Image (cartoon, rainbow, N blue to C red; front, top):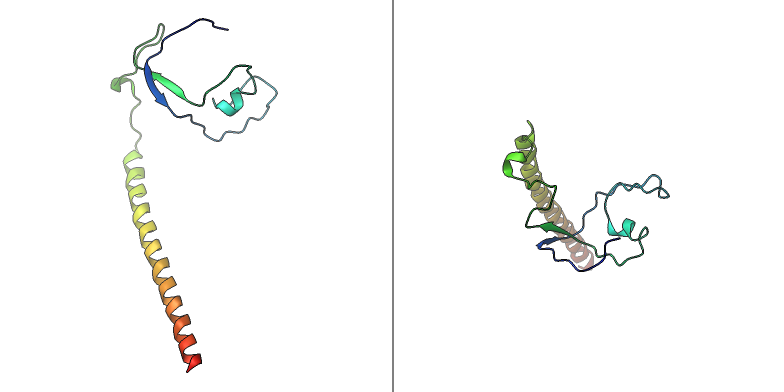
Length: 116
């Protein structure tokens, strides 16, 4: 276990998890790095975040734009379909609102007709 003081400079990021289930919680292999999983395995205080270092560390090469993987064939199509998804959602929300207003007016008309 490391001891002593140290300085780290970087961007503080929120924790992430992908919802993976640990098939064997008794072993020391975890499917994702989550504070909730790690806190059960250590006796120290843990904080739910991680840090992206602003300077390189020994043994690691900094990531550059050139080191990114090539964009997949269907990335543009997936983004276009995602944009259409929001238009369909908006149209559906407008339809639900219109249907609710129509049903409310029908109830009021029936109530007014029964009172007369």
